[in-house]
Image (tube, rainbow, N blue to C red; front, side):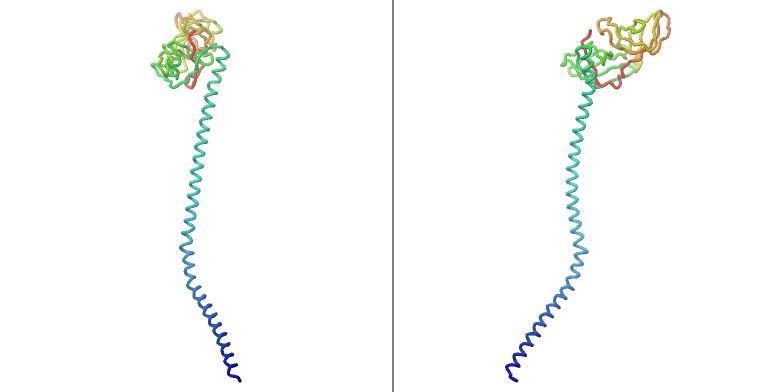
Length: 261
């Protein structure tokens, strides 16, 4: 056998064996590397991944919180607009009836808002948001839908005090709509009750009939309602008459100030 041919075969075998060794070593390295990488990957799964998920969740929660804050701001703005619109509607509804009444009866006057009220044993009065700046004067008449509420007793630049018909100092010449019995309507400083005084025992008075201002005395105009007759009893030469006001003064929000007639 030719020595050169043997050398070539040996060289080929050597190359093949070398390649096999390289492949084996590479496979071994990969296997060993996998053994090393496995606990690292496990550690990542156990330790790093949850932290990353927690961080992602935190970022998501921060975004959601930011979006929620924005939505809360929008809700707050919408609520404020809704309150404003409702308040405007309530105000307009409150004064529309008074405007209609003024138009119907052709009485000049100013619509006033009731700011505060007092119903004590000493005094019954309102405070309204009209004053000298609005040309309001003492003794101007205060009404609501053809009901007599009272008169201006004190005037200040920005507001006025109204002495109510339920106050004992407010006296109004009045008559009964059906029987035409005349007398003086007076407050009693008792909420929901007023009196009709100085009515002769000879006069006929019916329970439930309306009581109107007569216009006598040049302060209160004629024809404003004061209430209805609640009870009538004989008391010597005069009748003891109780009157139930038509207006619920505790819940009245607006009234009209007119020039005395």
